[in-house]
Length: 129
Image (cartoon, rainbow, N blue to C red; front, side, top):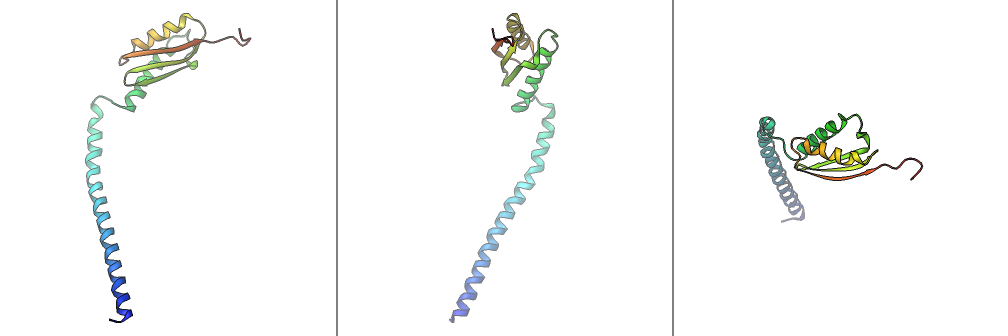
């Protein structure tokens, strides 16, 4: 064989290998794409099912915020709520010590809350004492 024939053979083999690899990858993509409609159908049908995961945590957090905000004497803007699988953590400040237990009781009364960790403190006046 001449060197030109060897090069042509090597190029042809390289093209064949690359083509097979590309064809294999597109076949995998087609399989993934084919299963995607089923996944979205499952997600759409799950809309009536109970909410779980991060979405459930966000929903619970909003419910707790709304319950606290209904109380006019409590400044909900200085309170942060973290929800994780029904466990709620309250952080931030309130203006009066009696509000600490009241906010915790409000959080416990929200449907879906399984426990409350209360890390609220009383805000110090601007003077510092």
